[in-house]
Image 1 (spheres, rainbow, N blue to C red):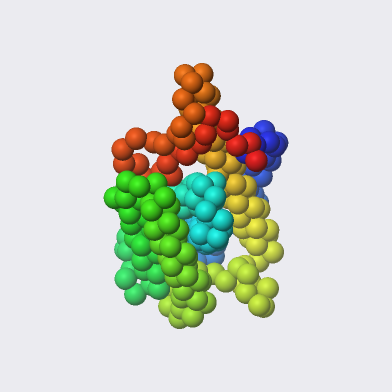
Image 2: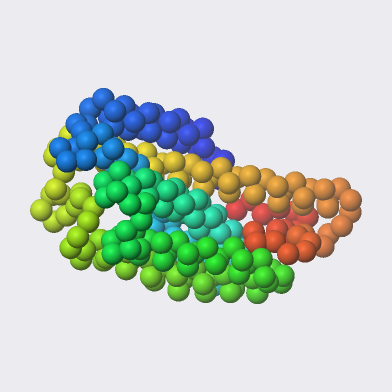
Length: 251
């Protein structure tokens, strides 16, 4: 079910990302102060926005799991947070490169944007070890969902830190006054943001399709072997345990 429309989505992602990079290198002007290095902004900031939204989405899906106890919501939350952690690592790396080029230091501890994002990243870095430490699948999903919800509540603090920052702040692209970027730079940023959103959704659907197909394959093998017991992954695993009966759920 997750593979439906995946080819068209992948094509759209490729087209938008290609257009975004073309705009970055051939349309958007160099920044008057930072020069060419400022173009990392078009990767760093969209990646940060999508990562933070992914963390929030993981918390929303965790709420859905606690309400319904449907394992699919735990899987969806896990994949969203998993991908957001990967993007978050990219945000920290590109942020460090940008800081070195702009301020002469790889890290500036009095820059609230970087520090607040680092705190959120380290908080979510505990998500995988938490899951791995719990062997019982139902208890693992329940505890992980509670963690995702609580951690998700801290994410807006990063946005507030950006808005309230006085020194070293990033450009305000979506401010109430229309943003501080010129029109050509704003257009490039918005296309880059759209491309990053599409990339996240595409990767999410790919991973969900892969995991769902693997669960169905295990269910089919158990059915052919004549075993009607639910399928559960053996041993400890950070990923949500596969719990399917011999007849896979296609809903």
